[in-house]
Every structure is written in C-alpha cells, then in structure tokens.
Length: 127
Image (cartoon, rainbow, N blue to C red):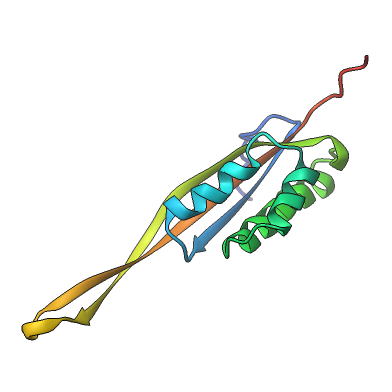
C-alpha cells in the first residue's frame, strides 16, 4: 500500500526544474534570470553561455535540466520550448563576523537563493 500519486501541478505542455542552495544573493541571481525570461530555450542557452556573470553557469545547468525534463519525462519538442517562468526565491543566510576597529565586530551576511525555471512548448504560428 502506498500513497496515491499527486496531481501534476503544471499543464501538460510545461516542465520545471528547481536549483536550490545557490550561493549568490537573490538580487544578483534575478539579474541573470531576467535575461532568459520569455526567450526561446536555445537562445537562452546561448545567452547564458556567453554571460560574464559567475552564477550564469548554475542558471544554465538548471535550464538544461528543465529542457531534459521536458524531453524525457513529458515528451515535449525541444525546438519549440520557451522559458515561460524564471523566478528567484530567498534561501538561508549564513551570518559571519569580522573584527573591526576598537574591539568591535562587523556582521557579514552570506545569502543563498533558489531558482525555478519553467519551460513551455508553444505551437509555431503557421503563416
């Protein structure tokens, strides 16, 4: 006896991938996520490959995972995929201290973020 399967939260033409515990602030991660929102998956991969931001490597890895999920788990056409959502959430914050002058200490925050990418298969408009 096992639990019944949970209903799928996404429509049949979408696939999702989540990257958690990314060691970057959510604000910086959102700058890279803005690059790929609404773009075709192939164009988004090309943009991330040539981005100079350090976190673009992890975003590209998450996007490739979403594309692989769409192809292998949901039988979607890879060439017709569009990044429909790329949203960023806050994770934990590590707190560290550094010595300052006159015997005081200063706080250092080391934030983590998480990234959710949803790709959708769109039908090409026949013209």
